[in-house]
Amino acid sequence: MDLDHLELNPRIVAAIRKAKLRSAEEVLRVSGPDLQRLTGLSGPDVQRVLRAVSARLRGSSVLTALDLHLQRDRFPEQHQRLSLGCPVLDRLLGGGLPLEGITELAGRSSAGKTQLALQLCLAVQFPRQYGGLEAGAVYVCTEDAFPNKRLQQLIALQPRLRTDAPGDLAGKLPFGDRIFIEHVATVDTLLECVRTKVPALLSRGRARLLVIDSVAAPFRCEFDRPASARRARALRALGAALRGLSQAFRSPVLCINQVTEAVEEDAAPGPLGAPGARLAPALGIAWANQLLLRLMADRRRPEEAGLGPPARTLRVVFAPHLPTSSCSYTVNPEGVRGTPGTQSG
Figure 1 (tube, rainbow, N blue to C red):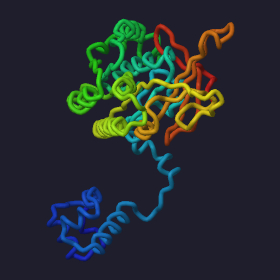
Figure 2 (cartoon, rainbow, N blue to C red):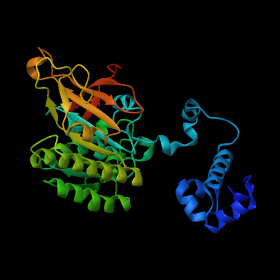
Figure 3 (cartoon, rainbow, N blue to C red):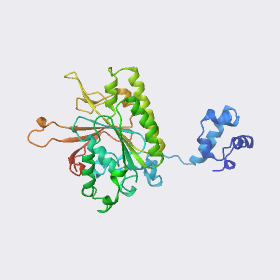
Figure 4 (cartoon, rainbow, N blue to C red):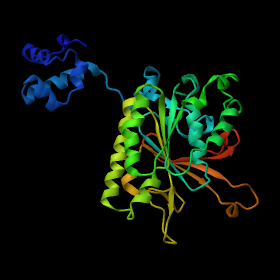
């Protein structure tokens, strides 16, 4: 939008042009103090500029949150999600993983967390019309060796899982060539990887998904006291680096996390854990504050399952855009599948 269309004193418009701000959109990208510094205008004049630009771009009508939601077809990129490769799980998450922000998947051992992470590494490579981002994934291992044997099994069975895509599409995608694996063992090497190696791949468009499996392992090894200030600073540094990557490259970040059990026998579950459970994700509130979305994967132990098979549940613990809800799922040779008709919330 041209600056001449704004109802402003010509002196103010001339100052804006002198600062090499050529449109109303460019003016709004600058903070008030920076705008005052660049233009030399007074504080009241800067406020007049911002009000005039905002009013012009907004127009005469006022939009509600519902109006913006109903206009999602006009802004498809803002509502884009990364599919999990299963329609039931996608419905639970409102279409899939958000492209901006950190998603945590916490749960006890053998719940299927790594299985779902591997499935996402394949789903991200599908074309956009099938919920993918047409790029690869970066998989950072901090505990065990990368499960390549299981990955090869998932690749071979993709046509069985992805019935929404043409049968020959999975055979044409170079799945194995677009998963970049890194092993780290310390907090410093994890931060270095996130700050240097991962941006190089994302900036070239070779990857659009980052998986860390698991985020808790290096912190638990290096810090004896969970409440230490050094650990909290390192967690905040990692969170800031991951959020910066996700926002800069519109790439989902998935962090697998371990869980801890409540020590007190009658202790009620805290806000970090799932309702009705005595499990809470590791790393405490310092890490929880870095997250956009927290998921909890749970698996009943065989001794708790009676005569039936162990049941698995995926639960949305918190998210700004989703209600608290859950659904059952199974881990099969072809991947992770949500169970239809089990969503509750």
